Image (cartoon, rainbow, N blue to C red; front, side, top):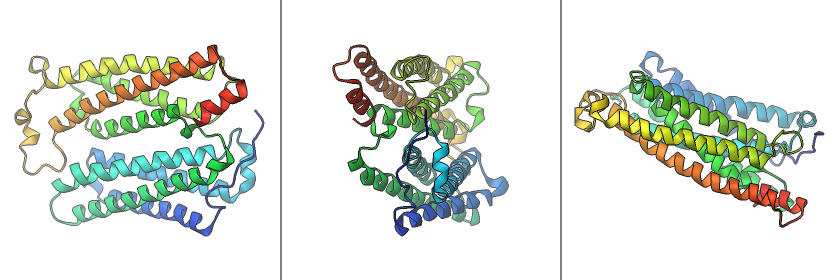
Length: 322
């Protein structure tokens, strides 16, 4: 597919646009640095937070470089505009979720001192980053909407894929505590399910950034339908096995919160194991519902492709923008 011209990026619009990008770099850089400075006092979830913030920092820096060197657009086989707006939406959700998780399940359990102060400051900068990325997403979307530029994130299907991966990332934050699942093979299978579906969802989003019907062996809507159906089957197994082996005492689980020693430890520095198990079970059910909704949307796309009621050009418009 030939290189496509790209609309100007956020930084090339106004000085305010560049200021938003610089604010994103500053907030994610400070947040990750503060967590890194905690050293050996970090717990598993801290490492996930630091990974999210470092990832956002690096990708934002790359976007700034590409938009500063405008001739680099010609090397991409897709609308460059697609990537920053999808990334901004992802980053806003990631930073917002890490802020909420940190403020509600981590910071309250820390003792007074430098570690707690660093965690509070990092959470505050994460909130600033979430606002900055959200502002970029809204500004870019509204700014280019009248120009009828194709973007995957405008579709219901694209938003569902984004939400599925977002929920999976929150699950990863909770299962960073490996003691939750290492003792049971069935629970290890559940972790493999979450990882596999996340990879498949990421692949679907990457394919959605490029109009790939011309070079995929299977039509894009059909491939999406197959991946979504496969993910649903995997999530059904996880929804059954995770609560069964975590809360059934006959299978080594703990049915009551009071039976978990970590929930009675007054000096715990993070939400207790039983609460983490419950959170993963709830998030698994939520993500399964998102996949079911995604399957319905994908089925409609395949049905319209097989029995089109509109010209191909109008179908392409409806697929990407509606």
